[in-house]
Image 1: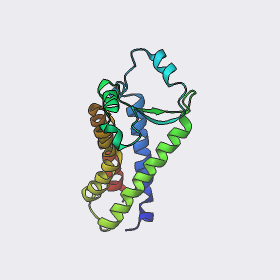
Image 2: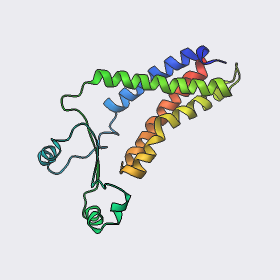
Image 3: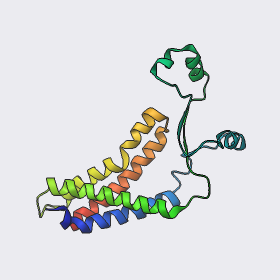
Image 4: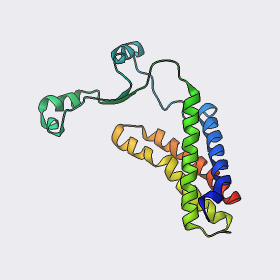
Length: 181
């Protein structure tokens, strides 16, 4: 089985994951509380206004040796400790983001097709195709967020919700591959 023969499940799974993501993020309530409002939003906006788009950490040690310095240790103990992503100012432009998300869904589907083409014999049963493509899709859509919770303070509740999302995307992907491969 070659990847090129799997173009139908690649395309269908990308479309299904894209639609599911749109429904999850626009219509479902479970991600509504993933981000909290700061106590004084205007003061926070004013403090962050001079930052260019990018990633920042507070406090930001210059090197590993600084962690031994009592001044830096006090900064961490007193807080706040934060990891901040700043995006360009202006109203969000959804078109390019949606296009990138669809491209990501296609990339995941192509990786699934690669694994299917290398591990599953032609004419395999639905469940075999479902298991391989679904497992690969679950890893692609969900596992990286564990690192975000471990290292950068992403709430575990948000990561668990992302696992639920990944499970939905992976079942749709597995179904598409099981049906059309």
